[in-house]
Length: 126
Image (cartoon, rainbow, N blue to C red):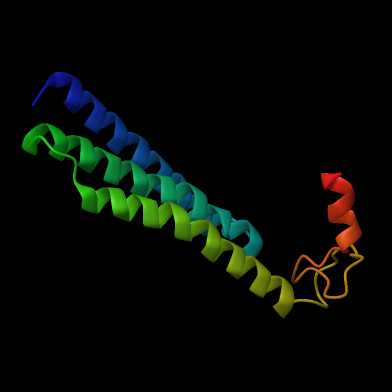
């Protein structure tokens, strides 16, 4: 394998390890659920993504073609992590509705959905 490819694979693995370590440390040390939510969804996602990118680079130089499986796993991971983080955050807000001091909204449903009046959207577009 070419030395440049080895350096790229090593770089991706080291960066992935650093992100994984920071994400794990954040998951253990942060105080409440809303703070802990960022560690696994942001840092650890980039850590797993770095390992998958390193795997794609490695197999590209060994077999001569990109692995479609790693690309799909990376895409799936980057698409689902923010969605699951959003669901967890909204569930926490609804569960602790009376305990968390949130600023009031003008909407009927509060923080659960975006129910802004139609004239606000019209004034933004026009």
